[in-house]
Image (cartoon, rainbow, N blue to C red; front, side):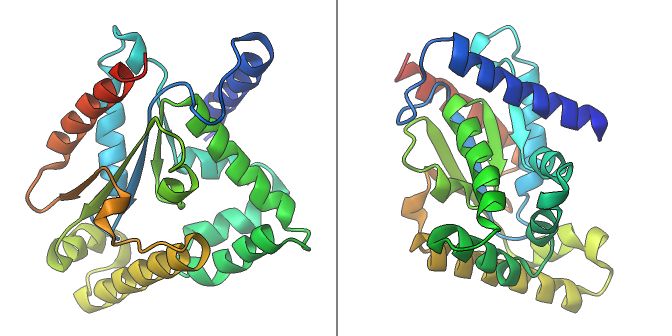
Length: 238
C-alpha cells in the first residue's frame, strides 16, 4: 500500500513540478491521451485496466507509453491517507454508492457544506491527472468529468448477466440470485448518479468512443485495440 501511495504521490509531485517549471499545459487541451472505462457491474472494467497497464508497460521504448498509471484503486488509497477523506472514500467503494455519493456531489454542486473541500480535492486530482494524461480511469464518473478534454478516449464495457454473475461470484458469494441483485443495484446506482448530476444516460452509446461486449471480445483484444486508439489520438495532436 505504501508503495502504491508513494508511486501516485510522486506522479502528483511531477504534475506540480511541471506546472511550475515546464511548458504551460493548456487545461482545455491537455498534454497526453488518457482513457476512461465505464462498465456494467461485472463486465470486466478493472480487469481491462490491469491488462492494458501490463501491455503498455511492455511498450516503454515508445515515449508515448512511458509513465502510465491506473487512477482508480491507487487514487482511493492515496485519498484514504487523509482522515478527512476517509468517509468519502469508503462511500465510493460500497455498493450503496448512490445514497452516499449523491449527498456528497450535491454538496459539491450546490455548495454550503464543509464536505465541499473533500469533493473538490478528489475531482481536482482526477482533472489534474486527465489534463496531464497517461492515466486509465475506471468509473467514478470519469467519462463525464473529463469529456470536454479532447485527448480522452472513453469506452464502455457491457456483457450478459450470466457472465457478469459468474465474474462477480468469487467476491460476492456462491448464490447467483444474491450476486444478480448486487449487480442490478450497482448498475441502477451508476445510472441514477449519471442522470442526476451529469444529465446523461449512461447507456447512451454516443457518449463513448467505443462500446465493447466482453462476452464476444476478449479483454486482451480490447486492450490491444485501445493501444492503437492511444497511438491514433496522439498522432492527431503531436
